[in-house]
Length: 183
Image 1: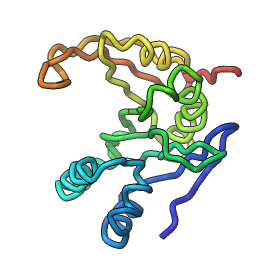
Image 2: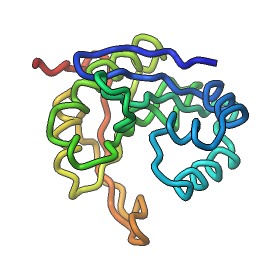
Image 3: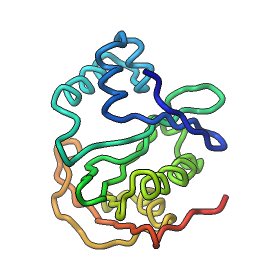
């Protein structure tokens, strides 16, 4: 089963959903799966297997994300997409990450999100996209605001990062508020 791919100026966006991931976990060798997911170690793969075996979706909560590949090398450099997708309520949380520092601060995530945010509204039929961002994560806050996300509040002790409870700033975006950054 081949994942659908989309292209931006510098990236290939490989769609990953429950069907694709299930197929890959059951049919790929460890090395093929590590390459597909952009993992470097068998320890990282073991963690992903635990997540996979824990369950991917319930009847009304799903995920859909994109692996981000460099167009010129097909190297997996990160991911961006939707988790905690409440299909009954047409809303999802967006998440994203780049695997190496050298890919940050180059506008790659802005480029990816310029495709993925409209995909959420137009293809997935979302009416709301949410982002929960650590209060100290200035780069992610700037990224969300580029697209029109509005700060809606603060969740205290919301996420654990390296064993420490951290606050999350709550951002929301409705389709009519979406802005696509230029350049």
